[in-house]
Length: 314
Length: 291
Image 1 (spheres, rainbow over the protein chains, first blue to last red):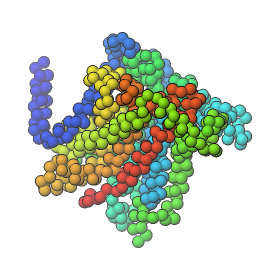
Image 2 (cartoon, rainbow over the protein chains, first blue to last red):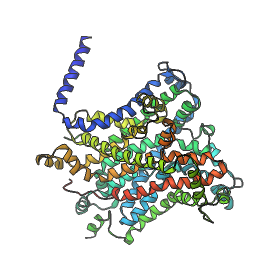
Image 3 (cartoon, chains in turn purple, red):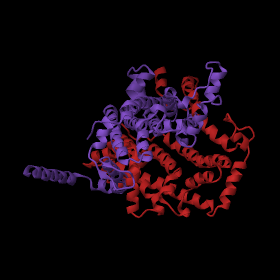
Image 4 (cartoon, helix red, strand yellow):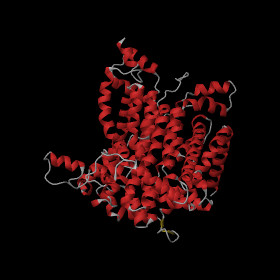
């Protein structure tokens, strides 16, 4: 007891020492943001995490159930282990690095073009992010519609590749690849913009110096000059790619029109959370799923920090 | 000499034949990316029979303004003038975009460049917050907003959205790139923190600020949820909410044309705002003594 008390005391003493050395202006500068952030973001998240230890039907007050939601999650929720978790990981591994590399590649190619052309192309590449939600599902549903009226079916029938139209969006086999394509199509978002700005801001002198020092190819240029000079943007892009990869799951449900998706083929953790939260009214369990998802995202983002994080400099 | 030329390929002044390979990579992708844009614009001008046509076509054959006229008629017959919703939306979007950028950049500066021993912890909490998926947060957030008396209060459109974790994170990343020497030199000359922020940091992070402005404009302008969840009085609701109810309120078939026109009207400001600001995103910072 005494030792614990001493430890707490020494913690506060150290904090006080550190506080004395701090710039007081830093507290002032971050106070307004911190107030709003804590009230409307941190506190709700903490409460949501607490809900994970309860059973909550959204009508009665939540009742404490300890770890039983998590126990159920890992032992009894057969869909979770069989489909949801593997789907989520597979989807994230395709979408995360895929979208990230695609964004970087597009940004880099755009940087090689003169200003006007680049502007037009940047606007076009960014539009899927602008229209997200409006047409996303509508347009793609038409393309992949399950009867001969769907564009893809129509095309394949014309070419004689198939005899019968395929119900792409209801088929467990095709739904998943279609989700991946559609998500990659919409992946030129903030990360893309940040990386574009980053690439354009690498000082030209660095390239010149490197070529004088014997650098030979454009590829070497990317690896040795471009990426190291824009680590902060690369890190931002990576974290956003990871977050998107794990949280843009609505698409499978929108495309197939049902949650859970046929045979759980396109169901991700995000859909599972919505399924429990808004369809089965089991908010406690939905919260437990959210906590697990957070841990997974956090783990992957640590990897990104390992790759692109700046060592703490003085 | 050839090697020197290679080195200045990035951000070229004019078109050159050796840029063609890059165009060959970008153009096919750009073509696919353009489809929704084409679709939205064409759909809004389709007459009724083309709207319900199956299989649907991307391009309109006989463009008409009927959908817009119908939408306009619906807006003039309902109780509250549509300009009221438009005013609400413009006011909300303007305030949120400006104030959230101000708060994020101030905080980003403090976390990136000041002597501030808890900055690591704060930045970490910020990134964790942007990783948490929203479903389970909905109810706790509702309870907090209710306890603060913000239900049916105009401020509920604004205050909860002033802290944007993604924005703060991005701005902090860009400020990390500003060399410390620049700030030290300014301090030596007796500049206060706020002067450094205003005169050195802000001009250097324009690309980040524009990116975040685009992002927060999109999320606020298109937001119909707040009006649906927290607002009861019609006069306090937003344009996005109004547009979404208009097409839903009339019968689903006649509503199709109106909703296509409404989508276009909602979408165009996003596009215009993006086009205006993307120049800033791609503007190169003045490299005054960087590295």
